[in-house]
Image (cartoon, rainbow, N blue to C red):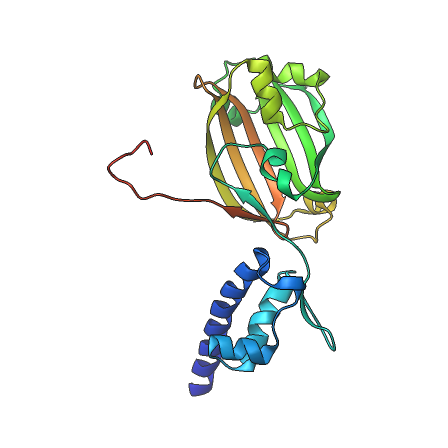
Length: 249
């Protein structure tokens, strides 16, 4: 029992250390991409080197770091920050980190499923424009986007440059008014075989699944998206205010 308790405490402490190290890795806190020696980390966190090794193993399993004999521990991959402060397209959000390009994998006018028709507030028999895009950042697959658009703003996209433009930017030009508000849901899902192949990710890899219903400034819903982000290449960030005096803040 005492041995089991000791193992559990070590595992708990390793997770705590991994959480703190993960933030530094993701935010570029380690200059040159090298993490400190295990002995230095043990002193910093006031724990054993075995616990530090366990914490580093957790980050290695997430694909964030590499551990090489004679080289040490290095950052393996960069995660890009996706802000949740404003309603922006992917290229607008990540413009400081490189070029976003889009591969249109499917596009057409389709009869919407009832769930899509209901979310977009469409009458029976009304078609929608469906667009499926693979989105890359600096050439690396980042997300698979499935988008349903009302015909009024969707049909003009057939003649638009979807390879180099965010749909949001094009929608505002077409509608002649800005986008207003979006309803957002984020959850973790595992990559199905098809999505994994498209995103060049391992089967079952962790993905960030974003469902977003976007309205024009006049309140009309026009864009329903299901976006699967590679969880090892993107992190969501935002600011939250607790202000009960001003619900509109």
